[in-house]
Structures are given as C-alpha cells and as structure tokens.
Image (cartoon, rainbow, N blue to C red; front, side, top):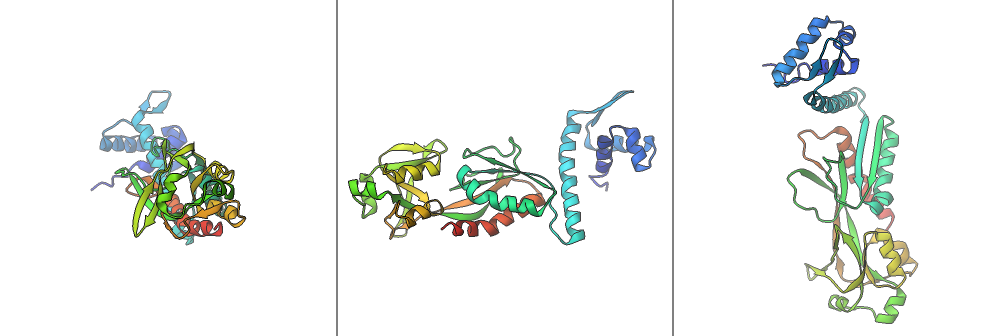
Length: 302
C-alpha cells in the first residue's frame, strides 16, 4: 500500500525552491524525477497542484490548500523530532490565542509570555476580546473562555481553573440602602451587571445545595469588570465579581462582601480549540502550562 504522504516533502521542496529545476538541484535528482514525483502525487490526490507554463509555475487553489496544511504538519513533525532528540519540549512557529480582556491581561498573558521566553523559536500572538469568536475563521489555535460553554460539536474544551464569585458593595451604598441579610432581599437592591454576549450575566448563588439565579433591578450594564468594580466602589449598586479582582478592595474596606455565609457559585475557565485529529504540540504544551499555573496565578491575587 502506498504511503498517503509520499511526495509531500517533494511538493514542499518544489514550492520552497520556486521551480522544479531548483528543487531537483537541492535534492540531487533529475528534473524528470521531480516532475514524475509531483505527477504521482497529483494523480493520487485527484487534483492539479501546479499551474505550469514553459516560463513559470504557480500553485492552484488546491495546491495552496495542501501547502497550508503540509507546512503546518511539517512544523509539528520537526517539533516532535526535536522533542525526541533532545528530551526537551521544543516549541516553534506561531501560536495565536484569543483571551478575555481583563482576565487575559491580568492572569493568562503572564503565563503564556513566560512560556514564550522559554522557547525562543515560538512566536506568540495574543488577541484580547470579550466577544466569542470563530476560532477557525479567524485563525486562532485556541481560546480561553470564562463561564459555562455553549454546546459545540466543532470545539474541544479543557477546564483550566475556576472564578470564585462574590457579591459586594461599597460601605456608602449599604449605609444608604441597608445590607441584605438573605438572598431574597437582593431583589430590593440595585445591581450593576456584566454584559455577556449582549445579555446581562445573572447572579448565581448556591442555596441549600441548589444553584439559584437572581436578577435584581439594575440601571448600569457594562462589559468591563474593572469598570463594574469602580462603579460598585463609588456606591452605585451591588456587583457580582470574581474574588481575584476585588480582594484588595475588600481588604482595604473600599468594598464589603455581601452574604459571606452563602456559598457562591464558581464559574469555570476553559481552554477551547477546534476539533482535530492531532493536537499541535505547541497548543498541548500551552494548555498544560495554563492548567498548571493559572490556579496558582489566581490564588496569588486572592
């Protein structure tokens, strides 16, 4: 049985060399042997890879598609070979990651930039946005996402850590409107909401072992957690925020935790990536590093 990958290295050499003749020189083959090798590959794939004239050659659309995937696979094979030869995890190539804005900047980016410093051949590209992007269409290797994930047959997810959520308000707000002493009293107060995918993120509390959602009245809706914390500190209402973000404000009494004896819900943090038969080495190592370091990074801010 023919190896399905026979001819791929030859194809890459022809593209990189710019011509059949130069590829033949590099490989110490005749031009005829190179041409026959490419012809066999085209026959096996059932497509034409090159548009050839007497003076030039260009890739067809099918050739461009094969080149994109072949270069990626070749890079992964080189990384795996380097890993086996050196006993070390050698990462190279470009790693594109989509991160939520504030959490990504404060907690995730330092872990990934540390990884990049350890691997000089790794090119790290971080994009910060709270919108849910299409990883395939926008060319990302993986994303870090907060909260419950929507069902998807196209993505693979791995949990990295948790957000420990707390209700809080400023002493000035509580002096004016009182401190709620039970979950049902929350409905009498003003909420400051985080906008998640154009919808307010409902508050979640665990009461007698059951998760319950609360949606008090609110006039302030924001898509930036820092701005919500600032508004809460200014006395504009009650906010539901991750503890790593507000712990300093709690310790300095600028904010006060509400219902501290009620178990807060922990929101999951996931890495997600497009479903693929082979997970690239750089993605696997980056996700493993986040799974190892991110809980410690979050705890250090508690």
